[in-house]
Amino acid sequence: MYEKQKLPYFVKKKIEEGGVAEEIFRGRILFDESREKNKWINEEHSEFLLLLTSNGYEVSKITEGPINYANIKDFDILFISGTRVGSMNFSAVEIRSIAQFVSDGRGLFLIGNEYIGKEKNFNYLFNQLFGISFREQVKDDTNNANPTAGWNYSPTINIFVEHQITKGLEEIIFGHVSGLNLTKSSEPLAFSNPTSEPVCVPVVGATEYGKGKVIAIGGDEIFTNAPKIGINVRDNKQFILNILEWMPAWIDCPNCGSGVPPVATICPRCKTRIQR
Image (cartoon, rainbow, N blue to C red; front, side, top):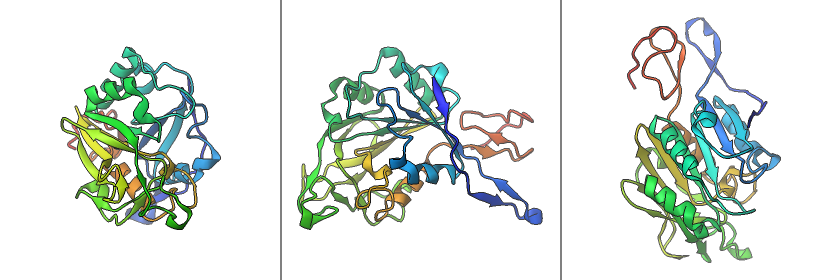
């Protein structure tokens, strides 16, 4: 049903006492590839996958649906993204499972593309849950990754709302990005420019649901190795790191030092109550 990826792990955390090195562990990430095979675990995303593994994340993918709580409950962050190969229909069981997953204290990435605004059922269901849905593609003839070449599909984003996720950002680049509709308690974090069409629409939004957190990002190419719109362009990498820092993560028990998952309030090893 799901596969664990054997990816390189480079970063070590040095403990001051005695200079002993210890691996960081921040969580377990699951990519939904049940709707589009090899969507995330591929060479095109190698820099992003390396960023994850070198910052303490284990990476897995689910390759066969449907999603249910039993096959996602052992993970801490779930990536669900729009496809370019078919519809994004979710069953009632899948929607309930995702809702419970987040509500229990985990993190969810909802990621769009230029087509996802047409996925009416998908958008309706996630709007009902989280107050987040995707709209039409954002284009910008003036402020984009390559104006001289007419890259209006890759708008530059430099209008941010003050938030942990936008800290230290000056400009990010999105390729084939959709705008967002945000209702309920969902919060816009980044907007397209006044030169864009549509004008000044949210392209990043976030909300908290139960004990968990949800981030919505209008475009998926920011996670790729693409030279003008990918992870290593402008502040794109810092943006991703900020989101991961905001997301629920494992912590060390203050009593015994064992790792404690985001959903736990008591250390599984020594039974110490955990204050987050």
